[in-house]
Each structure stands twice: as structure tokens, then as C-alpha cells.
View 1 (cartoon, rainbow, N blue to C red):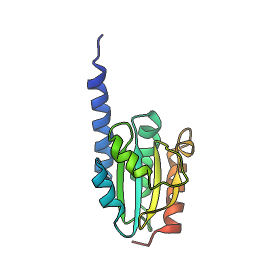
View 2: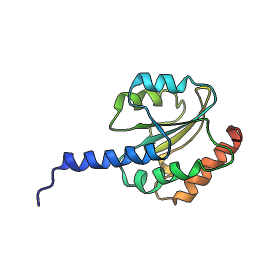
View 3: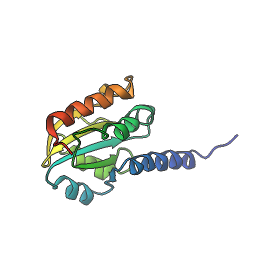
Length: 145
């Protein structure tokens, strides 16, 4: 059986993007998108998406469910590592003090990094543990909705 790898990857990427869209996250695909989103006032949760298994099995489900909470970020956005490379690189410029990591989550307030959940805190963990980490961040930095 000869499967076209590019077609397969396009399906994986499309599904990953659709999951984030369905969860209410805005796709940031350009440097300008990142700059506009990160200049907004309030709190912004940034999900750094990827095609790895821990993104699909842990991070995206956590991104979907964590926001169903009394306190949540004002804005939900996502960049796609390995796909929207310039947008991802621009977003990472804001994650001062944290090495590049995907999948990961960054919580910004008025464009400044508050905290991150890095890949090593996602990979090998249950989605509920990541949800709990995110919601603890929301509790600390976000307003009640």
C-alpha cells in the first residue's frame, strides 16, 4: 500500500486546526495576526499546537475542556508549530524566559507572559492534569466570567 505522506499530513493538520476552531480558539497564521492578538488588553491563552501525539491526545483535549471554568482568559488563540512557522516564532518572542516547546500553553496578560505549561508538563500526563494546571493559572490571572 502506497500512502501519500503529504496528503496524510494535510489531513492531520486540517483535523488539528478544526479541533481548535471548534473549541473557540482563533488561528494566528501570520506575524501580523500574532501582533494584533497580543496587543489586546486582558488575558490571552495561547495554545502552541503541533502534529505530535501528545498534542492530539492530551493538549488539544485539555485546551477544549479547560476553558469551561468560572475564570477563563479573555482571548483564546493558537499558533501551529511546524506549520505557521513565522507566526509561531513571533509568538515565542513573547514567551520570555521559556524555551520553544510544542505543544504548550502560554498565558499572557496585556501582552506579557504570566506563565506557561510546557511540553514536559503535557507529554506523558493525563489530559485532566493539564486541565488542572491551566485552570490553576486561570484562577490566579483571569477574571471571573
